[in-house]
Structures are given as C-alpha cells and as structure tokens.
Length: 192
Image (cartoon, rainbow, N blue to C red):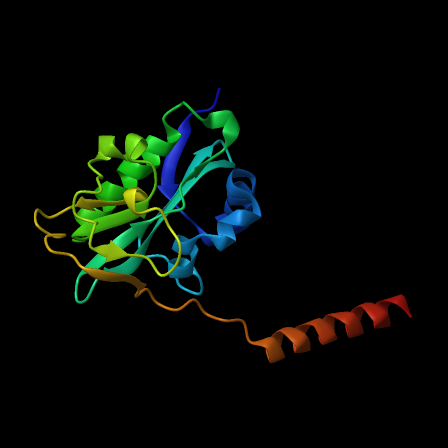
C-alpha cells in the first residue's frame, strides 16, 4: 500500500480537491456560514495542504485569514476533508497538525474553526475563548472553537469574525469569450 504524504497544495490539485470536497460534504458545503468567510478569497499564503497516496489526493485542509473581532487577526481552518477510504488512518489529524505547525512557523497567533470539540480538542482547540465571537450567519455556538498559537491571543476576543484574506482573482469574461470564439473558429476551419 502506498504511503500517505502531506504536502503544500498546488494549482494542479484544484480539480481533485474540489471533487474530494464534493464527495465529503456534497452541495451543502456551499451553504455553510464558514463558506461565507472563504468565498471569493484566497487561502492564507503557504497554509493549504493536501494528503496524497501515490498521485491521488486523499485529504485536504486550508487556513484562511480572518479577524476575530475588531483588530484581532486570526486564521480560520477548513474545510478539512478525507477520502472515505482513508478515514481512521490518521490522515485528518496529520493535515491539522501540519497546518497548525505551519501557521506557528509563519507567526500567526490564533486559529478558529467550526467543528466537533471531541475531535479537535486533541490539537488544543476549545470553545473557552470564543463565546463572545460570532459568525456572519447561522452556526452552532458550541462548535466555534479556537486555538491560541501565542498565549493570550484570544483573550477578550469579541465581535464578528470577518474575512480579511486577499480577494481571489476573477476571470476576465471578455478574454474567456474571445478565447472560446477563436477556438470555435479554428475548429470550424479544420472541419471545413
């Protein structure tokens, strides 16, 4: 059996990553409040990871730049997804550990997520300092968890969690239409 490897996500991983997220969460993933903080944004630099087995993507996790209330920078972890055939092999735990270690090395102070405390407590996440934070939509307060990478980073954190990451580039519609028009014209000429 090939070994599982955790590495930085690459642009070429996007389709396989999206397919894994679709299998793991289905279309409901786009309705989650956490998604409001991720949509139209780029993940935090250097903090997107995939687990691979051979050439196959079997797990994924990303961290996103947010504000944990006014003036308090943090990261948002998610989504974490593992291929059903790889669950209970420690792939998810390895991805979360790698993401936390990388965030520490890059000097980030805190990570937030919405998830099950029974799973994330082993990494140090808890709801202890998130009670005065809220999300921009429906969520279960007891599932809003935080991890301080720097002691005291979430002390007195209060307010709306808001996206601060760089906007994702939007495709130039005119350029896409022009390219498709050229392709159709070229196919028509070859067929003639």
